[in-house]
Amino acid sequence: MLRVRNQLVKASGQCLSLARSSNSFKPVIARLQHTKTTETRPGIFSPFFSPTDEEQKEEKARRNYPRQTAYDTAKCKSPPTRNKMLVRDFIDDSLYNPNYGYFSKQAVIFSPETDFEFNNMSDHLEFMNILGQLYKDIEGEADEVDEVARQVWHTPTELFKPWYGYAIAKYLVSEYKLNLFPHKDLIIYEMGAGNGTLMMNILDYIQQNEPAVYKRTQYNIIEISGKLAERQSQRQDVKEAKDQHKCVKIINKSIFDWDIHVPDQCFFLGMEVIDNFAHDLIRYDLETLRPYQALVSTDAKGDYTEVYEPVGNDALISKYLAMRDQTRYRSPVLSRQLWLKCLQSLPLAPNMTSPEFIPTKLFMLLETLKTHFPQHRLVLSDFSELPDSVDGVDAPVVQTRYRGTMVPCSTYMVQPGWFDIFFPTNFELLRDLYLLVCRGSRAGNDKTVKVLTHREFCERYGDVERTTTKSGENPMLMYYENMKMILT
Ligand SMILES: C[S@@+](CC[C@H](N)C(=O)[O-])C[C@H]1O[C@@H](n2cnc3c(N)ncnc32)[C@H](O)[C@@H]1O
Image (cartoon, rainbow, N blue to C red):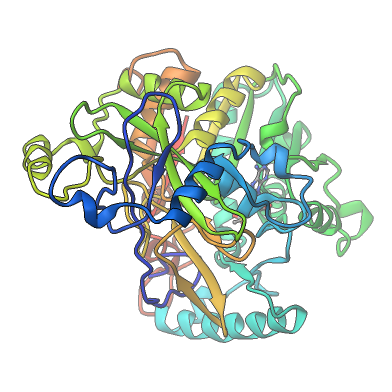
């Protein structure tokens, strides 16, 4: 079973946690110290936690650090110090900064040269072995390119090409024929197209099987990476000019910078893109249950500290939480009220709940869809759960490649640019939020917005026969069992 993008090996933990004091809108210092507070409350334990002179000086300086967003730091040539950023901006900067971000360095998307002949394999273990060998080769190549930590994505699109792309195509064509054909064009937008494999497979399928639909097909890619956009446009170079898909348009920009109104009925695809969308981090005051949002403060030496302020001055976080309140969702960190009460009465108890990561950038995507693609239908797939994540609800996996092995870390506050940070998606919550944002309807009221597992989708639309091994095992159905899809 392939669970995450890369092989994971346990690393020794570096535990971090916090404390805060409770003045209203000022950022609150979170000294990192095993979920125990260092707030200077009167009591017998206080003397043990009095800050040193140097710490006090640092705290004073920290209050004057400028607050920056990932847009502000995009022009920095190296990671900034003496600043503070909301967690989503810190993560965005770590991953996407054009100069030192993780993705601005080389990202390799694993793509076997030839398609796998599943029918000729004895069983899924043979598939695993072939994959292992190919993966080793590509990792070796990546090492030769650069010593720095590199990420090698392997996605269902690539491992099961062309069959996975054909399954998506079959879904798109059947929905299109049901609702739009022959009066309207089949318009597809794909966000984050990687090597361009899905685009090729979808268009090949339509060209070969649905020539009348093919004539009316337009395929648009929205790709943040300049290198990958280039690779996508070169993808057809191997084909003779007459066989090339002329209906493809590649737009090299982030979906978060999208500003074109698309009034047409269209399909909007995103396969394994949303897991890198940055999240914010909140905790709740144990006494009042009021939410606090985290900022990462970076000092002159480049050391990180979480500081907290009450939710209220960031429109995106406030809007997300207000919208989420309208769904049936209840945060797991608040669900054990009795335990929280007991916790409070303990000496040296933390004064905040454990962390909860909230998908603010994913929420922004929903708003972009509503505003700029009002007639879209969505097809998104990604991880619904991840092993080896850092502590917290919907917490990310933070990992880096060290001597050919992926090593997971226990905090997201790591040197920007050296670590992949990716999140699981709560698809059931996403569904309810989608209904509210894009359909203006209450959660659960619209049966046309569905969440399927990867397996359910592939069973329904995939060519199960062609992806089955001689033993009867089917890797396309067996693997990626921690992936889900939302179809609207
Ligand atoms: C893990 S790869 C997946 C590639 C492909 N969809 C697949 O399944 O093989 C993520 C892709 O999303 C792109 N991407 C990430 N963030 C994006 C954003 N904000 N806007 C557009 N593309 C983005 C990356 O550059 C990359 O092409």
